[in-house]
Amino acid sequence: MKSWKLLIVALVVAVVTACGNGNNKESGQPASNGNNTENAGKAVEIVMLNSKGQIHEALENAAQAFMNENSNIKVNILTVPSGQSPFERASVLYSSGTPATLNMLDAGDIAKFKDKALDLSGEKWVKDLAAPNELDGATLAFPFAVEGYGLVYNKAVVEKAIGGAFDPASVKTLADLESLFQTIEKSGISPILVGGMPWSLGNHFLPLSYAAQEGGDVAAFLASLKAGEANLAENASFNGLMDTFDLMKAYNSGKKDPLAVTAENIAAAVANGTSAFTFNGNWMISQLLEVNPDGDYAFLPVPIDNAINTKAAGAIAVGATKQIFIDKSESTPEQQAAAKQFLEWFVYNETGQDFLVNKMGIIPATSNNPLEPSDSLGKSIKSYMDSGLTVSFGANYVPGDHSKVIGASMQKYLADSTDRAGLAKEIEAFWKGKE
Image 1: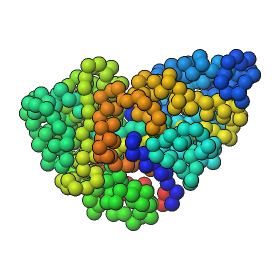
Image 2 (image 1 turned 90 degrees about the vertical axis):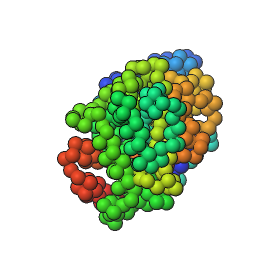
Image 3 (image 1 turned 120 degrees about the horizontal axis):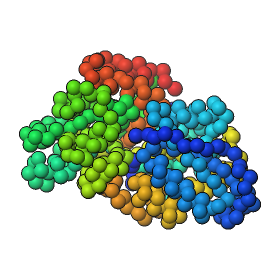
Image 4 (image 1 turned 135 degrees about the horizontal axis):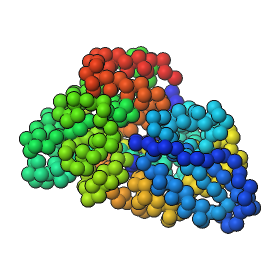
């Protein structure tokens, strides 16, 4: 079975926005001082498809800074619009014959475009990756962002509720989490607000059950689902995770209309202190700081069950989630060279490194970047990584329609429109026969 070797251990940040404009043709403008000799004498225009809406402005500013240094290259940023998955957007662009030069997709979707992806195995940055990032023995994509997710909490709110310093390591079991929720509730604060977004429920929460499987081999477990051999109704990790979800539902302050709770709602609730916890990833830091610039936030791992000796106990999901491939089917050699130069700028140029870490809040997948995360959620993830308390980012292994289909199934469970047995059957039906 073909799968990603996403083993990044030294391994943020999706509310998507409206798309920008751009095309994939050379501009014909004279060049002046580009650094890449292959592009000398011509102005080359490239398009980057961005699937992280929250960094759209920072990415446009980064592109401008790059163009200031490389005036023979024009970079247009095209952001995936709200309601469309990165896979869908890239597919539409290819169908129309106008694909982006650089395509930022969820890691699990790169394999679907491998026949259109330029082999990047010989690029300088490959040797500086914290761990291999290969598909079928070749590096076909640049791991743009290392991210993690779990239970995000407002430190001040939690510590006020419990009357002292809070150590997230003290919560490893479902019983521990319930006790904490009870204490917070007694203080007059909502313990948690659960988002009803399908991408969060389907591509982030549910895949924790894949990552927590005994042995930690996500690909092997998904192979059993594809073969119709896995029985989720009797699967310990699936049932443990859903026990935790049931607890989250019970204390959810949005339970009266759970599907109406948006990413904006949960960020505002945690930042304002009306809810102590939510489930999300480090990419929400920009929303949190927009509401409360002085807030301090961290991650609590999602308890899978009451066992404390499993790999998943006390660990958060971390992985190189956003990957960028360079189109080889429609782009010219000059555009491919310019695209490579833009990626290399983020890895080795001090301005590019600063944009990546400090302006976009991204944890880089290369070990050469000397900058540390400056925001509290990035720092929290880094602390778990440094302690080896991580599990595989299971969403990196799922197909593009997993978010929509399984996300809808999880929404039904959140709204009590189906029970656990029904959810398990829908998940098994989704996977059976998948390529």
